[in-house]
Image 1 (cartoon, rainbow, N blue to C red):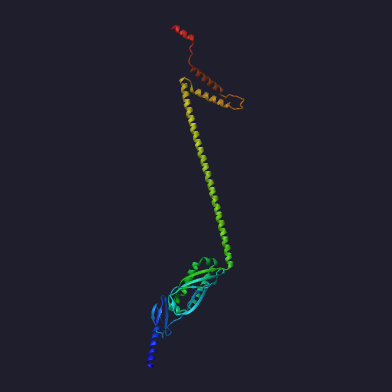
Image 2: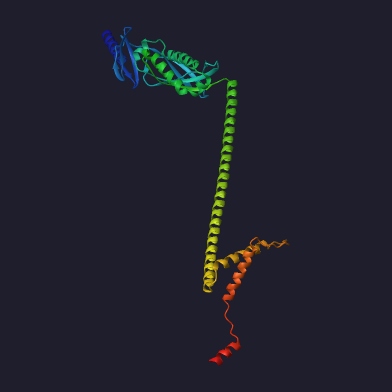
Length: 343
């Protein structure tokens, strides 16, 4: 019986020893194994065999963020043996920072990091989550302290890039890769927000006034240009009308002159057939027309003759001679009888 009990105990011990020697690691997780207090190896995902009495996983402090049903954020810290190699999100609580223009502002930041080297994360830093949180807070204060409030509100991308570069460089010896840093919320004090709202309203009122003035300016310019174009078109129309009237009058005068020339030619031909002087006839006609215009006034009571009235009279005499030369010769009855008897 004693030997059976010893064998049974030995079998149970072997089973327990073998069971404790099997270690299953999940995907994207790892474990740091120490043998007799010293680093031995890092386990990969899958089944791993350990010596239970000699090999022991190294425990580390880890930080978990949970949200209760009421929406409150609960931060819980635990001691774990398994190291998560996935990207981890840290939502840091609000903290007060002072800008370069001495404005106290509350900022809430998010940090995305990933453990690249588990050995450094275990042996190079005592408490990795707290170290990253404190480093992020101090770096954020330094970066915001170099900026004004307006620059802080409008330069989130610049702040995120600077924070990521500084944190990534500082946490490299911890085996941590900082992928992204995001400013989740920036909350200035209430009085600063009121002043900013007043400034925003004033700026919008100024822009509205500028836009309204620009609109009135453009409207006046367009109206002036329209009046200018209308005046130009009106002047152009008047000019074209005057040109057409002048051309019409010129054509009319040409036609009148041509008609007068034709009439003169016909009169001249008729006078020459009667063997008269056309020049004397034309001069006499012009003198008569001139005398008619001189005495055609309504209140004219004095009729006078020009200086060369004798020339006019001689012209009239010339006209009379022409007309007499053009008369047919009358034959008396006595003359006809005398000519018939002599024949």
